[in-house]
Image 1 (cartoon, rainbow, N blue to C red):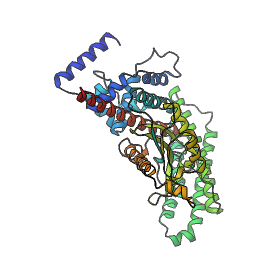
Image 2: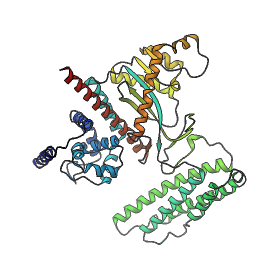
Image 3: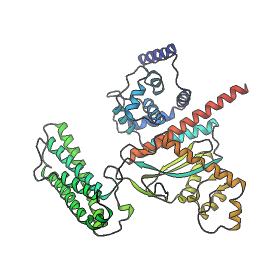
Image 4: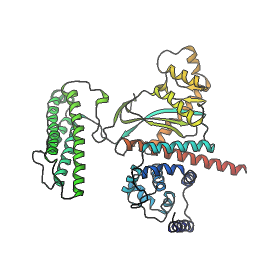
Length: 472
């Protein structure tokens, strides 16, 4: 740190002391914990300097410390980028995020900084946090409870007609943008069919069940024809203008990016057309894995979990494993809708790597049950395997075991992970991912888990310190 920066920090600390301003105890404990573990900052530094020829030159941006602290604060408070920027402009949060007397960047700078991080980096930082908790003696890994949940992607409820409307309006808008960048009023041969597509989409939405049965196929055939015309017209526009250049290099870059977007959405539009023709016109049952549920978040999965209130959810299934003290020691963003029972053996192995041994108690709901999993837990040394049997007739031994005190206590302990998921959803913003793309989805989940773990460790260390003071 330069002498000028040191003087700025000293002045900031003196000003805070003069005004009597202090961080709230939890944030102060998190700040102290992060200061004691510099290796987490190095993980972020590697991401920021990745692909740079010379990281020491160029305009100064946000430091790794500022990016990581700001990301944690954003998820702790469940703020968006704009609110994060506005709140950091105060004295106390400047201290937490390491800005001190430095100017706070605009909210889009936070967005760019966070997006340079990789999901693997945040997962490595989470592992370092859990390892630090073990070394500090605030977590021993004696108990483990696991569950899966669904984190939603930021999409509207998908239907064939709204997907067609998305394709037509987005592709048309991009072709208009390409024409503007090329200095033309429009691209010859491309027709604007947004009004026709919107009219037919709304007609399908307003149909009664009887009308849907009698007239839906015809309207869909018209809508498919419009979408095909728009997609083919956009591809023809790309072929027609592939040698055309802009007036300068910046315009050429914008044209290249727009062309790339048009090709991307035309490809997704072709998938929408294919699945709708197969399902609506041909009466085919399209496999879930082949469907697309949003052209904006094409990675979205359809998840059926048999719940009455939410029989179908759109997003990604997330596996979570929590310790007795509320630390999330494992998490995974899954592809598709895999069965829960496949996670038991893998979670035991990862727990053994972190804590050196399997937990004494392993708790889950009945979705994780299989005879193989129960046997595997027992063979590896788990003393209390609290996985209720799913379906079938229970043997007398099994029925007697599930009525024992230790099994019932284990199931009460297992229920605590439902509360942890609720906290992640309501408090850390994990219920619905507002970021775009699969990579940012995983970053969103990882940041929520990291914020949860830092808050729990800070609370545990504070309680530990209070107990020592009382004992003294």
